[in-house]
Image 1 (tube, rainbow, N blue to C red):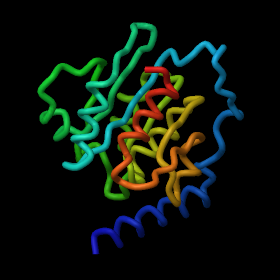
Image 2 (cartoon, rainbow, N blue to C red):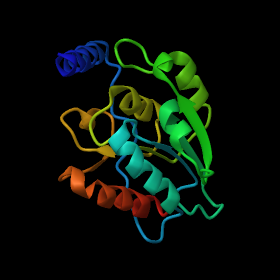
Image 3 (cartoon, one colour):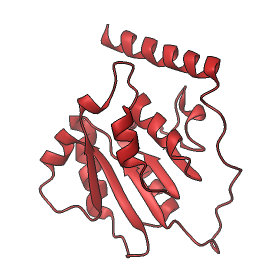
Amino acid sequence: MNQFLDRFKIRLVLWWFRLTGKLKPKGDLLAIRREGSGVGSALIILPKGRDDSRIARYFLKSLKPDGKVDLRILMDNSLYHSITETPPATVETYSADDVSWFSLPKRDLIRRILANKYHAVVDMHPSFNLSTAYLTYLSGAPLRVGFSSRFSGKFFNIEIERKSNHFIEQSYLSIQKLLNL
């Protein structure tokens, strides 16, 4: 029943966005080249949930920012409290109170997180999460990365194909290579 309600809310919100014209393509086509200047600022949205938090902690350990990138991480409060090591970047947290019944981020969360401009925003939820996907879209970042799903094309301009849950770590490493972190 809960999955049905979640899918219904997503479809209702997308229908409303189409009707009001709130989801429009943002940005031009991009090329990723070896000679490029790279990403100067990035926001990485970590997934919530027990299974994904283990992988997210592994990803955090593997990050080695070189000081050239202003790296920020957004995570659920429950995930933040489960991390024992010091994160390698600035951490912002959110809770269920920051998300509306329609699974959209509330204005305070949007203002707080998007006060900075980002070159790249990465939503690392392996399955579609409307609130973080919409936050990624609202960022207007030239690189908006997320996992491929039925609804992801409206929110991300780079989609990572996810073959199975066993190889999600490989997808995370692909994202890390893409951003050169």
